[in-house]
Length: 81
Image (cartoon, rainbow, N blue to C red; front, top):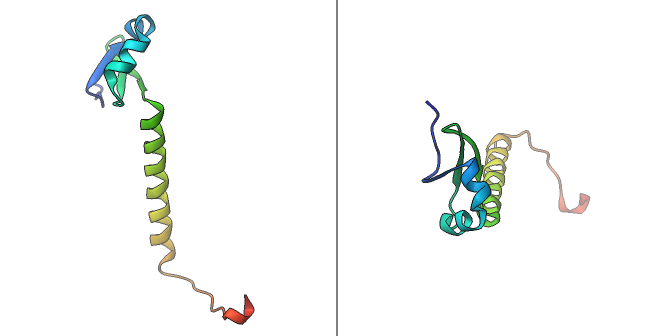
């Protein structure tokens, strides 16, 4: 069984027929697009996608900070800069 990670689901056929109304109904939430009753894709609004990408970038930055917090460190004076 495939987990569906959205509250709203539509079939591929329904999405083709009613794209605009499905986007309006989704109201900035993800929509699972089903093909033969299995999730084939997820439809996201542009705003939702942009928030998701920003969140992932923040997580990557936080991981990089944790990795580098142990060093090695290079001593530099302000005069050298």
